[in-house]
Length: 354
Image 1 (cartoon, rainbow, N blue to C red):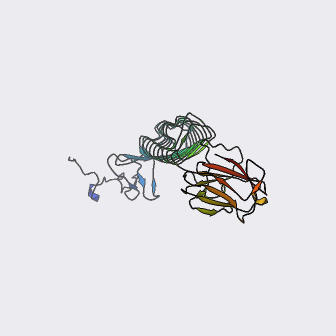
Image 2: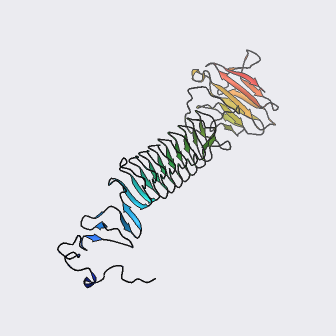
Image 3: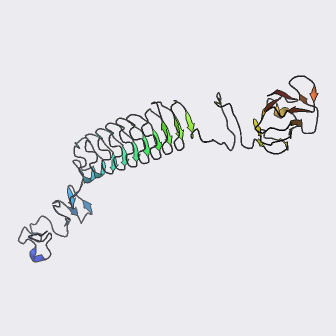
């Protein structure tokens, strides 16, 4: 490549001279006032005195301007191409950003094609390539990550954080999706996705899924983890409404009996699992009003031994299910696998043995 003349004058003698030249009395600018960089640089350039980039400057072909309105900021190529006088305070950094914008205000988009289709939407924040690319009139959405929130067209008040979070969810308002592909291909409103690949199916609304790959298709539901995972509660779990156990199993931490002899104490568990193979002696705490209404279930996953239940202190306060006689102990035979007791505050009553 060759040039017939240098890109920049290098000596004062090579600069235009005369009254209209840069050093002349009627010259429009001086070299101290303006710096123009790159091929085809704009004439208004960069004001060195005010440290400001003026309208329609080019730096090696990169446009640095305000678009149509001075209140917009545009750094990149092909941005804000349809902006009319009704839009203001928009920031576009990248390529082909907000190319359809007409009257939208206060949008901030960074990345190739970010917010590309915004027309009248306002208050949207898109950071990442193709983030919120298809939002048109939707407002007050935030997307951070490659293709985050892509394909949502009319939704508002959504938050997408993570690569492809909320992608292909064409509708939906007030959605929160955090994690890689969280909420991807999901629809519905007011749903919350926390965890990579978490999803809600069937277009249901008002549901929350938490954990990697967690999913539900039921409205008004909170899903914790996947079916292959356990959910532990290290402290008190309070349930105000109806409790349903689909597998008919309730267990709490510390409810395993693995020794031949044990004395139970507060806090009692609802279910105790006996894992000892052989005879086992279990002493329940001395009955009192503290235990009134308590139900304790014992289940055994090992056989070959009798389980004997008594009360601490040896008092005759057991009432067997088949009679009203008080006894000091009751048994679960080697062929039986479950029994339960309920307290009335005075007696422990054996409910059943199977």
